[in-house]
Image (cartoon, rainbow, N blue to C red; front, side, top):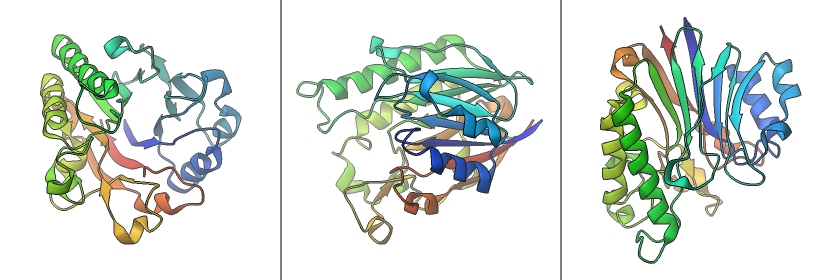
Length: 262
């Protein structure tokens, strides 16, 4: 089985239904994982997606916040979700393909503005979420698994526009990077994007606060595609569709792609 997979924080699937459909028409990924759908599952606009061949969906949602969905041309089996840190949020869903590969779609908490759990509850929730992810993957030791999503952490120095300036900014602080690395190690996940593109600055998010986002290029790589070692070699052709960030009324994230030949 060969398939192209994409992950994209859409920042409201109903508001940006047209952008999702445009991506489906122009790029035609076999599987599209969305985060921050901001919609109950029954309100996700499936009719237009089905018309483009995406007849399968596994999703978790809630009104106005969070939400994750896996849209697919290929048959999917819903294999559940986890409520890490007991937040009661729709931040994870998993689906199994017919070849046995399990896709985990995550939307890790952003963590607020201050990287100090003593004064910022959201930052503590983010660290707790990652810790419980680590413990879960350590216990399950997944095989034939792909993990994707907005993990809200840019781990490498070249995953941000300025490493030194962002060391005290949420998404790139040492404690977040450490927590992410521990979780990645627990599941033995391989970063497919960086396996394919090992060198150079690489971003998937540019703030709405910068109207000159493309020129200023103050980006961060917050969106990831990982795979377990048994299938990591099958992942290739990674790319980030930077131009999508410039579409009309865009998400602040760009889609990340990879292809798997399994």
